[in-house]
Length: 367
Image (cartoon, rainbow, N blue to C red):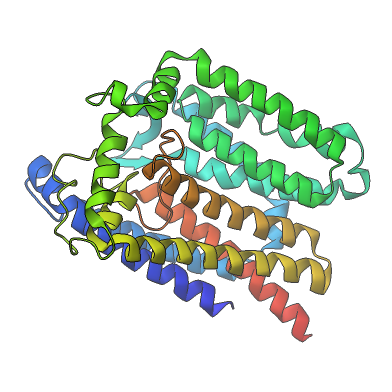
Protein backbone atom coordinates (compact mmCIF):
# COMPACT_ATOMS: atom_id res chain seq x y z
CA UNK A 1 0.00 0.00 0.00
CA UNK A 2 1.05 3.58 -0.61
CA UNK A 3 1.57 4.46 3.06
CA UNK A 4 2.72 7.99 2.25
CA UNK A 5 -0.61 8.74 0.60
CA UNK A 6 -2.56 7.15 3.45
CA UNK A 7 -0.64 9.06 6.13
CA UNK A 8 -1.06 12.30 4.19
CA UNK A 9 -4.84 11.85 4.00
CA UNK A 10 -5.02 10.97 7.72
CA UNK A 11 -3.04 14.12 8.54
CA UNK A 12 -5.32 16.26 6.36
CA UNK A 13 -8.46 14.87 8.02
CA UNK A 14 -7.05 15.44 11.52
CA UNK A 15 -6.05 18.97 10.55
CA UNK A 16 -9.54 19.47 9.17
CA UNK A 17 -11.10 18.37 12.46
CA UNK A 18 -9.00 20.93 14.32
CA UNK A 19 -10.01 23.71 11.95
CA UNK A 20 -13.69 22.71 11.96
CA UNK A 21 -13.64 22.86 15.76
CA UNK A 22 -11.93 26.25 15.70
CA UNK A 23 -14.27 27.72 13.09
CA UNK A 24 -17.57 26.22 14.27
CA UNK A 25 -17.53 26.23 18.10
CA UNK A 26 -19.04 29.69 18.67
CA UNK A 27 -21.40 29.30 15.71
CA UNK A 28 -22.67 25.96 17.05
CA UNK A 29 -22.92 27.38 20.56
CA UNK A 30 -25.13 30.20 19.30
CA UNK A 31 -27.29 28.06 17.01
CA UNK A 32 -27.71 24.89 19.08
CA UNK A 33 -26.52 25.71 22.59
CA UNK A 34 -23.76 23.10 22.24
CA UNK A 35 -20.41 24.30 20.91
CA UNK A 36 -19.32 20.72 20.24
CA UNK A 37 -22.37 19.91 18.10
CA UNK A 38 -20.75 20.28 14.64
CA UNK A 39 -17.33 18.92 15.51
CA UNK A 40 -18.93 15.87 17.15
CA UNK A 41 -20.82 15.12 13.96
CA UNK A 42 -17.69 15.65 11.87
CA UNK A 43 -15.74 13.17 14.03
CA UNK A 44 -18.48 10.59 13.47
CA UNK A 45 -18.35 11.24 9.73
CA UNK A 46 -14.56 10.90 9.78
CA UNK A 47 -14.86 7.50 11.49
CA UNK A 48 -17.44 6.38 8.92
CA UNK A 49 -15.21 7.69 6.16
CA UNK A 50 -12.19 5.73 7.34
CA UNK A 51 -14.38 2.61 7.60
CA UNK A 52 -15.38 3.21 3.96
CA UNK A 53 -11.72 3.74 3.06
CA UNK A 54 -10.72 0.49 4.78
CA UNK A 55 -13.48 -1.43 3.01
CA UNK A 56 -12.58 0.04 -0.40
CA UNK A 57 -8.93 -0.97 0.02
CA UNK A 58 -9.99 -4.60 0.46
CA UNK A 59 -12.09 -4.67 -2.72
CA UNK A 60 -10.35 -5.52 -5.98
CA UNK A 61 -10.56 -2.22 -7.85
CA UNK A 62 -11.29 -4.02 -11.13
CA UNK A 63 -14.73 -4.89 -9.74
CA UNK A 64 -15.63 -1.19 -9.78
CA UNK A 65 -15.34 -1.36 -13.55
CA UNK A 66 -17.89 -4.20 -13.68
CA UNK A 67 -20.20 -2.30 -11.34
CA UNK A 68 -19.69 1.11 -12.98
CA UNK A 69 -22.97 1.14 -14.92
CA UNK A 70 -25.00 0.11 -11.88
CA UNK A 71 -23.23 2.70 -9.72
CA UNK A 72 -24.03 5.45 -12.23
CA UNK A 73 -27.65 4.30 -12.36
CA UNK A 74 -27.86 4.44 -8.56
CA UNK A 75 -26.38 7.95 -8.57
CA UNK A 76 -28.98 9.14 -11.10
CA UNK A 77 -31.77 7.58 -9.00
CA UNK A 78 -30.55 9.32 -5.84
CA UNK A 79 -30.33 12.65 -7.66
CA UNK A 80 -33.88 12.17 -8.92
CA UNK A 81 -35.14 11.44 -5.38
CA UNK A 82 -34.12 14.97 -4.39
CA UNK A 83 -36.95 16.31 -6.55
CA UNK A 84 -39.58 14.41 -4.51
CA UNK A 85 -41.22 16.67 -1.88
CA UNK A 86 -40.58 15.39 1.61
CA UNK A 87 -37.48 13.47 0.52
CA UNK A 88 -35.34 16.21 -1.00
CA UNK A 89 -34.39 19.01 1.37
CA UNK A 90 -33.77 22.61 0.34
CA UNK A 91 -31.07 24.51 2.24
CA UNK A 92 -29.73 27.94 1.33
CA UNK A 93 -31.72 28.15 -1.89
CA UNK A 94 -30.47 24.81 -3.28
CA UNK A 95 -32.18 21.41 -3.14
CA UNK A 96 -29.15 19.13 -2.82
CA UNK A 97 -29.89 16.86 0.13
CA UNK A 98 -31.93 13.73 0.77
CA UNK A 99 -33.40 13.68 4.27
CA UNK A 100 -34.56 10.25 5.46
CA UNK A 101 -34.86 8.83 8.98
CA UNK A 102 -33.09 11.83 10.47
CA UNK A 103 -30.07 11.42 8.17
CA UNK A 104 -28.98 13.89 5.48
CA UNK A 105 -27.01 12.82 2.45
CA UNK A 106 -25.83 14.81 -0.57
CA UNK A 107 -26.07 12.56 -3.66
CA UNK A 108 -24.02 15.00 -5.73
CA UNK A 109 -20.88 13.89 -3.89
CA UNK A 110 -21.59 10.27 -4.81
CA UNK A 111 -22.49 11.18 -8.40
CA UNK A 112 -19.15 12.93 -8.82
CA UNK A 113 -17.21 9.68 -8.60
CA UNK A 114 -19.96 7.52 -10.17
CA UNK A 115 -19.50 9.44 -13.43
CA UNK A 116 -15.73 8.99 -13.28
CA UNK A 117 -16.10 5.23 -12.67
CA UNK A 118 -18.33 5.02 -15.74
CA UNK A 119 -16.04 7.07 -18.01
CA UNK A 120 -12.96 5.07 -16.98
CA UNK A 121 -14.76 1.81 -17.72
CA UNK A 122 -16.21 3.10 -20.98
CA UNK A 123 -12.84 4.28 -22.26
CA UNK A 124 -11.33 0.89 -21.44
CA UNK A 125 -14.12 -1.03 -23.22
CA UNK A 126 -14.04 1.23 -26.28
CA UNK A 127 -10.25 1.47 -26.50
CA UNK A 128 -10.14 -0.10 -29.96
CA UNK A 129 -12.88 2.28 -31.19
CA UNK A 130 -11.51 5.39 -29.48
CA UNK A 131 -11.03 7.15 -32.82
CA UNK A 132 -14.74 6.95 -33.59
CA UNK A 133 -16.90 9.92 -32.63
CA UNK A 134 -19.76 7.93 -31.07
CA UNK A 135 -17.61 5.45 -29.11
CA UNK A 136 -14.77 7.79 -28.18
CA UNK A 137 -16.64 10.96 -27.26
CA UNK A 138 -20.42 10.88 -27.49
CA UNK A 139 -21.09 7.83 -25.31
CA UNK A 140 -19.06 9.28 -22.46
CA UNK A 141 -21.40 12.28 -22.24
CA UNK A 142 -24.79 10.91 -23.34
CA UNK A 143 -25.08 8.24 -20.63
CA UNK A 144 -24.06 10.49 -17.68
CA UNK A 145 -26.12 13.40 -19.10
CA UNK A 146 -29.15 12.76 -16.83
CA UNK A 147 -26.88 13.08 -13.78
CA UNK A 148 -25.50 16.39 -15.09
CA UNK A 149 -28.99 17.75 -15.77
CA UNK A 150 -30.21 16.74 -12.31
CA UNK A 151 -27.20 18.46 -10.74
CA UNK A 152 -27.99 21.66 -12.64
CA UNK A 153 -31.62 21.50 -11.50
CA UNK A 154 -30.59 21.50 -7.80
CA UNK A 155 -28.78 23.87 -8.76
CA UNK A 156 -25.16 22.71 -8.38
CA UNK A 157 -23.30 24.42 -11.21
CA UNK A 158 -19.89 24.08 -9.54
CA UNK A 159 -19.98 20.27 -9.23
CA UNK A 160 -21.26 19.95 -12.79
CA UNK A 161 -18.42 22.06 -14.18
CA UNK A 162 -15.84 20.22 -12.09
CA UNK A 163 -17.05 16.79 -13.26
CA UNK A 164 -17.08 17.96 -16.88
CA UNK A 165 -13.50 19.25 -16.65
CA UNK A 166 -12.23 15.97 -15.19
CA UNK A 167 -14.09 13.96 -17.84
CA UNK A 168 -12.46 16.03 -20.61
CA UNK A 169 -9.03 15.37 -19.08
CA UNK A 170 -9.76 11.63 -18.92
CA UNK A 171 -10.84 11.67 -22.56
CA UNK A 172 -7.57 13.35 -23.48
CA UNK A 173 -5.55 10.83 -21.47
CA UNK A 174 -7.60 8.00 -22.92
CA UNK A 175 -6.62 8.94 -26.46
CA UNK A 176 -9.78 10.57 -27.87
CA UNK A 177 -8.75 12.52 -31.04
CA UNK A 178 -8.03 16.22 -30.66
CA UNK A 179 -10.57 17.25 -33.30
CA UNK A 180 -13.42 15.74 -31.28
CA UNK A 181 -12.19 17.17 -27.98
CA UNK A 182 -11.73 20.65 -29.40
CA UNK A 183 -15.27 20.79 -30.74
CA UNK A 184 -16.69 19.41 -27.50
CA UNK A 185 -14.73 21.92 -25.38
CA UNK A 186 -16.02 24.82 -27.51
CA UNK A 187 -19.59 23.53 -27.21
CA UNK A 188 -19.25 23.00 -23.45
CA UNK A 189 -17.81 26.50 -23.10
CA UNK A 190 -20.77 28.04 -24.95
CA UNK A 191 -23.21 26.09 -22.78
CA UNK A 192 -21.34 27.20 -19.66
CA UNK A 193 -21.50 30.86 -20.69
CA UNK A 194 -25.21 30.53 -21.44
CA UNK A 195 -25.84 28.93 -18.04
CA UNK A 196 -23.73 31.54 -16.25
CA UNK A 197 -25.52 34.53 -17.81
CA UNK A 198 -28.89 32.94 -18.45
CA UNK A 199 -29.88 32.65 -14.78
CA UNK A 200 -30.42 35.72 -12.63
CA UNK A 201 -28.70 34.43 -9.49
CA UNK A 202 -25.64 33.18 -11.40
CA UNK A 203 -25.42 36.46 -13.28
CA UNK A 204 -25.61 38.39 -9.99
CA UNK A 205 -22.95 36.12 -8.49
CA UNK A 206 -20.68 36.71 -11.48
CA UNK A 207 -21.17 40.48 -11.25
CA UNK A 208 -20.42 40.32 -7.52
CA UNK A 209 -17.19 38.47 -8.31
CA UNK A 210 -16.12 41.02 -10.92
CA UNK A 211 -16.57 43.92 -8.49
CA UNK A 212 -17.63 42.87 -4.96
CA UNK A 213 -17.64 46.50 -3.81
CA UNK A 214 -20.72 47.21 -5.94
CA UNK A 215 -22.73 45.18 -3.40
CA UNK A 216 -20.56 44.91 -0.26
CA UNK A 217 -23.49 43.98 1.93
CA UNK A 218 -24.96 41.42 -0.47
CA UNK A 219 -23.33 39.39 -3.24
CA UNK A 220 -19.86 40.76 -2.48
CA UNK A 221 -20.08 40.34 1.30
CA UNK A 222 -18.69 36.81 1.57
CA UNK A 223 -15.64 37.32 -0.61
CA UNK A 224 -14.83 40.66 1.02
CA UNK A 225 -14.94 39.11 4.48
CA UNK A 226 -12.77 36.27 3.23
CA UNK A 227 -10.14 38.68 1.93
CA UNK A 228 -10.24 40.65 5.20
CA UNK A 229 -9.55 37.45 7.11
CA UNK A 230 -6.63 36.56 4.86
CA UNK A 231 -5.27 40.08 5.28
CA UNK A 232 -5.40 39.77 9.08
CA UNK A 233 -3.44 36.50 8.93
CA UNK A 234 -0.35 37.95 7.23
CA UNK A 235 2.68 35.62 7.58
CA UNK A 236 2.18 33.74 10.85
CA UNK A 237 -1.53 34.26 11.51
CA UNK A 238 -3.34 35.58 14.58
CA UNK A 239 -3.12 32.19 16.30
CA UNK A 240 -5.27 29.07 16.29
CA UNK A 241 -8.71 29.90 17.66
CA UNK A 242 -8.11 33.67 17.67
CA UNK A 243 -9.67 34.49 14.31
CA UNK A 244 -12.49 37.04 14.22
CA UNK A 245 -14.05 36.43 10.80
CA UNK A 246 -15.67 33.20 12.01
CA UNK A 247 -17.60 35.25 14.62
CA UNK A 248 -20.60 35.62 12.28
CA UNK A 249 -18.75 37.89 9.84
CA UNK A 250 -17.80 35.21 7.31
CA UNK A 251 -20.70 32.99 6.16
CA UNK A 252 -19.91 29.26 5.86
CA UNK A 253 -16.69 29.72 7.82
CA UNK A 254 -16.55 26.03 8.77
CA UNK A 255 -17.59 24.83 5.33
CA UNK A 256 -16.88 26.42 1.93
CA UNK A 257 -14.68 29.21 3.36
CA UNK A 258 -12.66 27.30 5.95
CA UNK A 259 -9.53 28.09 3.92
CA UNK A 260 -10.01 31.75 4.85
CA UNK A 261 -10.09 30.80 8.54
CA UNK A 262 -6.86 28.86 8.02
CA UNK A 263 -5.29 31.93 6.42
CA UNK A 264 -6.41 34.22 9.23
CA UNK A 265 -5.40 31.98 12.13
CA UNK A 266 -2.31 30.28 10.67
CA UNK A 267 -1.25 32.90 8.15
CA UNK A 268 0.63 32.38 4.91
CA UNK A 269 2.51 29.47 6.51
CA UNK A 270 -0.74 27.60 7.10
CA UNK A 271 -1.98 28.33 3.59
CA UNK A 272 1.30 27.18 2.06
CA UNK A 273 1.16 23.93 4.06
CA UNK A 274 -2.34 23.18 2.77
CA UNK A 275 -1.34 23.96 -0.83
CA UNK A 276 1.71 21.68 -0.65
CA UNK A 277 -0.43 18.94 0.92
CA UNK A 278 -2.76 18.97 -2.09
CA UNK A 279 0.15 19.11 -4.52
CA UNK A 280 1.69 16.06 -2.85
CA UNK A 281 -1.70 14.30 -2.90
CA UNK A 282 -1.91 14.90 -6.65
CA UNK A 283 1.66 13.68 -7.11
CA UNK A 284 1.04 10.42 -5.21
CA UNK A 285 -2.23 9.78 -7.06
CA UNK A 286 -0.82 10.44 -10.53
CA UNK A 287 2.17 8.28 -9.69
CA UNK A 288 -0.23 5.40 -9.01
CA UNK A 289 -1.90 6.08 -12.37
CA UNK A 290 1.47 6.18 -14.15
CA UNK A 291 2.56 2.87 -12.59
CA UNK A 292 -0.68 1.24 -13.78
CA UNK A 293 0.01 2.15 -17.37
CA UNK A 294 3.76 1.65 -17.29
CA UNK A 295 3.99 -1.52 -15.26
CA UNK A 296 1.03 -3.63 -16.40
CA UNK A 297 -0.77 -1.69 -19.15
CA UNK A 298 -3.85 -1.47 -16.93
CA UNK A 299 -5.87 1.13 -18.81
CA UNK A 300 -8.86 1.10 -16.46
CA UNK A 301 -6.72 1.38 -13.33
CA UNK A 302 -4.76 4.24 -14.85
CA UNK A 303 -7.87 6.19 -15.86
CA UNK A 304 -9.66 5.58 -12.56
CA UNK A 305 -6.63 6.60 -10.48
CA UNK A 306 -6.13 9.73 -12.58
CA UNK A 307 -9.83 10.59 -12.37
CA UNK A 308 -10.03 10.26 -8.58
CA UNK A 309 -6.81 12.22 -8.10
CA UNK A 310 -7.82 15.03 -10.44
CA UNK A 311 -11.32 15.27 -8.95
CA UNK A 312 -9.96 15.70 -5.42
CA UNK A 313 -7.12 17.99 -6.46
CA UNK A 314 -9.16 20.18 -8.80
CA UNK A 315 -11.92 20.62 -6.23
CA UNK A 316 -9.36 21.59 -3.61
CA UNK A 317 -7.71 24.24 -5.76
CA UNK A 318 -11.04 25.62 -7.03
CA UNK A 319 -12.13 26.05 -3.40
CA UNK A 320 -8.90 27.92 -2.63
CA UNK A 321 -9.33 30.08 -5.73
CA UNK A 322 -12.84 31.01 -4.61
CA UNK A 323 -11.63 32.00 -1.14
CA UNK A 324 -8.83 34.08 -2.69
CA UNK A 325 -11.29 35.84 -5.00
CA UNK A 326 -9.79 34.37 -8.18
CA UNK A 327 -12.99 32.69 -9.44
CA UNK A 328 -16.69 33.15 -8.66
CA UNK A 329 -18.14 31.26 -5.70
CA UNK A 330 -18.93 27.64 -6.58
CA UNK A 331 -20.22 26.02 -3.39
CA UNK A 332 -17.43 23.41 -3.45
CA UNK A 333 -15.90 22.25 -0.17
CA UNK A 334 -12.21 21.80 0.59
CA UNK A 335 -11.74 17.99 0.49
CA UNK A 336 -10.85 16.33 3.84
CA UNK A 337 -10.83 19.70 5.64
CA UNK A 338 -14.21 21.43 5.28
CA UNK A 339 -17.21 20.45 7.40
CA UNK A 340 -19.57 18.10 5.60
CA UNK A 341 -20.42 14.47 6.21
CA UNK A 342 -21.34 13.32 2.70
CA UNK A 343 -18.25 14.87 1.16
CA UNK A 344 -15.87 13.48 3.79
CA UNK A 345 -17.23 9.92 3.66
CA UNK A 346 -17.30 9.77 -0.15
CA UNK A 347 -13.86 11.39 -0.55
CA UNK A 348 -12.29 8.93 1.89
CA UNK A 349 -13.98 6.07 0.09
CA UNK A 350 -12.47 7.34 -3.18
CA UNK A 351 -9.03 7.45 -1.55
CA UNK A 352 -9.59 3.82 -0.51
CA UNK A 353 -10.20 2.90 -4.15
CA UNK A 354 -7.06 4.83 -5.13
CA UNK A 355 -5.02 2.94 -2.52
CA UNK A 356 -6.49 -0.33 -3.78
CA UNK A 357 -5.31 0.52 -7.30
CA UNK A 358 -1.85 1.32 -5.95
CA UNK A 359 -1.71 -1.91 -3.97
CA UNK A 360 -2.78 -3.96 -6.99
CA UNK A 361 -0.13 -2.31 -9.12
CA UNK A 362 2.61 -3.00 -6.61
CA UNK A 363 1.49 -6.61 -6.18
CA UNK A 364 1.61 -7.15 -9.94
CA UNK A 365 5.05 -5.56 -10.08
CA UNK A 366 6.38 -7.93 -7.44
CA UNK A 367 4.99 -10.93 -9.29
